[in-house]
Image 1 (tube, helix red, strand yellow):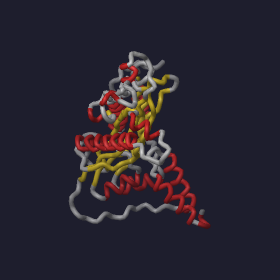
Image 2 (image 1 turned 180 degrees about the vertical axis):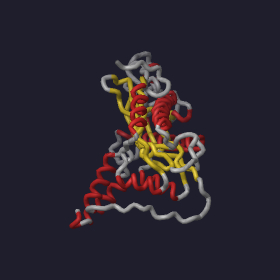
Image 3 (image 1 turned 30 degrees about the vertical axis):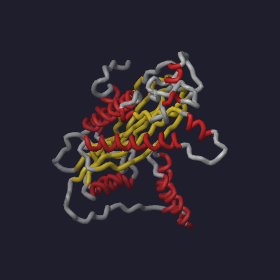
Image 4 (image 1 turned 90 degrees about the vertical axis):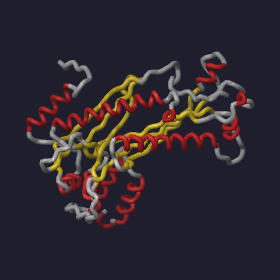
Length: 345
């Protein structure tokens, strides 16, 4: 029978799993052989695979997200007039638009999942988590709920000095080793997020129906401002965590249409032909801090891959393709290197 849980501390199943890991004297990880060797080369040992998850309900208002208000005073008027309101602005969550409440929910859920993962790390005696992958996905059979999950490998430094708070990082084993060798340490895995809403005003409508090749300036403005806002949020989070910089892992952008809530409200109905476009930008990265200011030259990591070169390249290619933080440029480079491998491919 499952044990009831108030939501505080580790979930009962996680606490039981941590007790089994500590009692067994063995550990598990998702690190490759090369990552394992790289982590050990800079004085760390893996102590176990750790994870954290949280399922959050996100409330709705009517047919549409209640948070998606374009804030355009001309919404609901005829497109040829626009109520004299001028061009539609971009309502950004980072500037206090109603969508800020939605971003706050996502941030709270992310921090809850990260907090549970770092709690597992502390139970295992780890100093931090490497190769942490953060995902967000709809909860099955419940469209209004989202599951936030983060999973990685906890590591412990060889020596008496212990970290007060476990670090979290998206960097894989080799990336973490290179960072430490260069005199830097990861601090925390961060997510900068922004939601922007822009009304499809008269100019936008005219440009989208043009027979000529023209820029849709309103939509260009939307994606530019929402990306800039997400980057600003990521930088602010990094500064609050005491980091000196942020290493970007991944950036995504989603854009979709919504019926304009403000126009529907103005005409006194539940629907309107006028629409808004919503853009959601997410940037994931790890804030890092310098622990060594000297100019010593980094040493060479004692990691020597063995075996068929083509097999190694295919494994690395598969790892990049399956990772949510996969770098397209790295993928193309590996494909080229595999093609050049010739007889070893």
